[in-house]
Amino acid sequence: MYIIMAYDVNEKRVAKVLKIARKYLTWIQNSLLEGEITESKFERLKAELSKIIDESEDSVVFYKFGSEKLFQKEFMGEKLGPKLFM
Image (cartoon, rainbow, N blue to C red; front, side, top):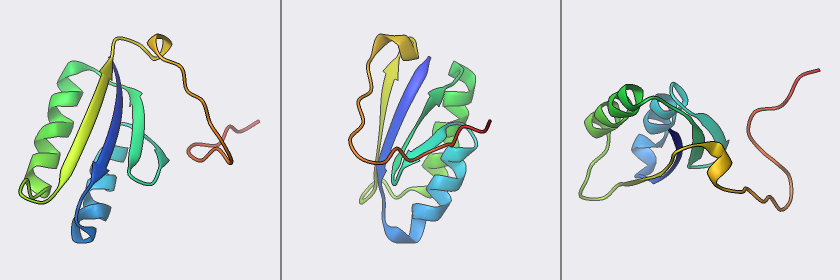
């Protein structure tokens, strides 16, 4: 499956959430990651995040797709995220 993850967490936990999420997904912009992930890895990602976030004040949203081919991305301005190497 393909996941887009967006988060809004207290600044005390931002670095920890990003570090965990980058183990599974590609960092695209501040608070936004995406990537292909298996169901078991997705469950591990959520389990790790649940140990860090405070559900009374933090928010993490996952958009799930069957494949990257099922949606279109459109950018404005500079593309952030992984650079392609030649």
